[in-house]
Amino acid sequence: MSGQAVFRANISNISQAEKCQVTTTSAHGFSTGQLVRITDLGPVGRKAVDRGMNRIDGQEYNIYVDSTTTFLLRDPISLEYVDSTNYVAYVSGGQATVEQTTFEYEGS
Image (cartoon, rainbow, N blue to C red):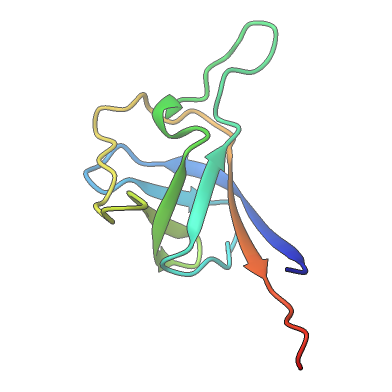
């Protein structure tokens, strides 16, 4: 194994919907089927301001890309869409990160 390439996008919105949709601040460059970890949604600052969507913070999801700046979250095993209708509303911040492992093989 030679290393990992990391792709990250800043989040501008996360929907409360039967199919949880994440919107990024610019084109994310992700592909359907990749695993994405959602981070940095937890409380921040001295007054611990909650950024919402606590249930998805720190979790990894399989994604379905529906535009250059949006994707839907799916369970990584069942591939069922994440239903976020009852999650705490998104407030601000967060990142979506995809790690792709690359391999180099030494030929014989």
